[in-house]
Length: 359
Image 1 (cartoon, rainbow, N blue to C red):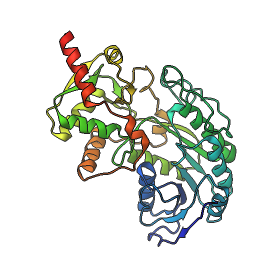
Image 2: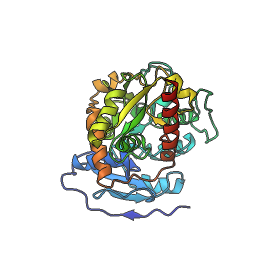
Image 3: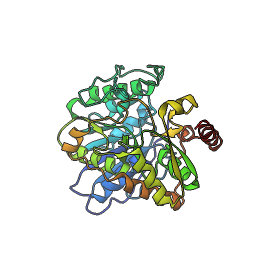
């Protein structure tokens, strides 16, 4: 049985009378941004985590424990009630563990804001998505073995698992549940390494392997904008699902030009047709982060979220802020997914040489 340690922390002035929230996680990237902004709003914040990843934000009430352990969850529930739970820490958990926490806390919280993913849709990344699009089927008590990944990379086992997590929360909270379904989240503190890889690659300069078409629009969102929207939904009186994607987006060309500008690089994109990249064995989505040939990958309708208050800053600002964070010796929380992203320099050089000789 895991030991739970309660740490008393002075509550920031101005929190009395504001929202009282419980952050599941709250120490890195999205969770940290949510906690920091909640404190700025004068809210009373409790964070529940194991204390193994990242530092607790100064000003929160910290409860140590394991969300997969019933005794820990019961002790946590006794610290309530809260106006809302905001869960950013379930991405690696099977549905049954999400279900365990949701049921343990359903009488201790008025609402549950659940950070999910567009991968829950059966049509992603092939078709344009709205909140009415079909969601993958997965039971709420499924373990890690449930689901599969298709031959072309879709659907994904991850998507099935996240769909089961949504179902678990819906069973416990019903209309009091909010589901946020982002595609890609970028910004300072990013642990997956998509934008940091591009920035570091562009900084090296020279000829850059770039995926055509250059004008294809991508829709990443800034972590700070997702945090603001999550908090707004925690305070709202409505439930339901929201696609969280940049409503305007930016072209891949403008994305790379912004990376070149902030790093003051002499990088020169070499735009290569998708078929050629595939022929040369470039893995989509990981070796060239943010690149995927499927028609629907960046065709996510976020109109409902925009109508509910989602505001997205220009991606150029996200790029500049992330570069500044890296230059200030920014270190993300160590995560195994980071090793999956980025094209090895020698492989890129071989492909560029082969393309040049064939021209």
